[in-house]
Amino acid sequence: MLELDGVTAAYDSTPILRDVDLSVEEGEIVGVMGKNGVGKTTLMKTIIGLLEPSDGTISYAGADVTDAPADERARAGMGYIPQGRDVFPKLTVEQNVRMGETVNADSEETLYDDIYGYFPVLEERADQQAGTLSGGQQQMLAIARALVSNPDLLLLDEPSEGIQPSIVDQISDDMQAINEDLGTTILFVEQNLGVIREMADRCYAMERGEIVDEVGPQKLTDEEAIADFLAV
Ligand SMILES: Nc1ncnc2c1ncn2[C@@H]1O[C@H](COP(=O)(O)OP(=O)(O)OP(=O)(O)O)[C@@H](O)[C@H]1O
Image (cartoon, rainbow, N blue to C red; front, side, top):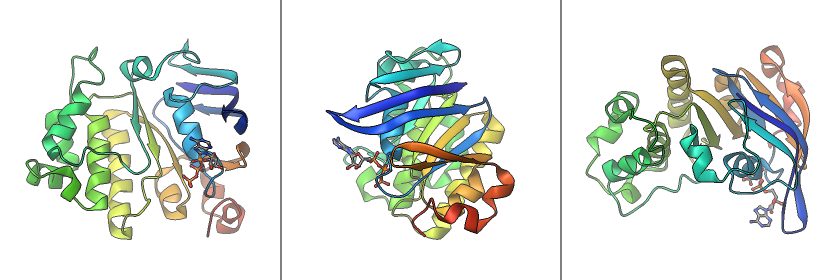
């Protein structure tokens, strides 16, 4: 479904991603783990089209999207949940979710009624300003806003950041349920070992902008094998 081949990307002249090869099959949940500053967010931004690679190609659903703008990728079924959530704080929860419906205007199907099944707390707080929600609830709202347009691929940037552990577990479970029920493919970046283990079918390890290892399900349970890649 998604394939990066030799992707290199830079901010101005500072190279961040170096020759990244990565692939995600339809229906998978794939993680990318790495410590602070290794380039995880830059990878997400490059895949969604907010940063142009200086080299390499990105294919999505069989098409070369390397030069496609972000809005075109969104309409083609990529959903993005940025680090820090970026909900609209003065808008209500419902208005935030409705914003997501407009992203994939080509899709006739919206999941507005379904998302509250995953996140009932958002229905209870539909009329509340998003800025008054807890961090965990804002993360759920950001997921709901991306999910409502029924994306085929969800890109999720550090879902556990700044969220209390019990809610992190709940969000991991929700992402797995979404993957199973809706068939949504998920690529996420994380440095929280628990989330990686809980969610990922398999995982890439990133260091200094490079993919340095690929870790299958068995090795994911071997703490020593993956501790080097994480800030633990
Ligand atoms: N807009 C920018 N302009 C210049 N350099 C940037 C920009 N954004 C990030 N960087 C640099 O790129 C490198 C990778 O940052 P990135 O945010 O992708 O890492 P990360 O792995 O997501 O880290 P974190 O876990 O802290 O979010 C860092 O050295 C960072 O300082």
